[in-house]
Image (cartoon, rainbow, N blue to C red):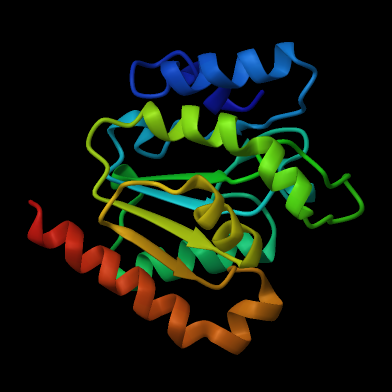
Length: 184
């Protein structure tokens, strides 16, 4: 058994677990948030697009065994953005992918997820930055129309974009890490 399952009711993730359970009650296949991250205490919320094949039966996590997670984790470590101050989620929280096929969200999927994305963001008390990674996440940012000063956009950490736009991704994450240093 995955030991993270034992921590889904810890105070820092309980409100998010509750929200996920409500989505699941609507027959939406949503993976858990990783309780090793900051949960609602996170000061940085990082949005990817939609859970990949590795998250279908588990967690949205930098510890998943896929290139997106590895690239994300490595970049966070390089710039000093520790997991305790971050939370990782997706602008389309449900699994569109299958265990064998990765699927990208369509604009309609993103628009349909806006209410859930807003509810998710509302659970965080001390957010200093929200980072949107990838084209679908950037589209969601426009649709959300958030009133939050610390918004950033960059490319997805999947292999194709990561290797092509590594410097932009790293610079964005570095700017967020510097913002965190200023706020401590």
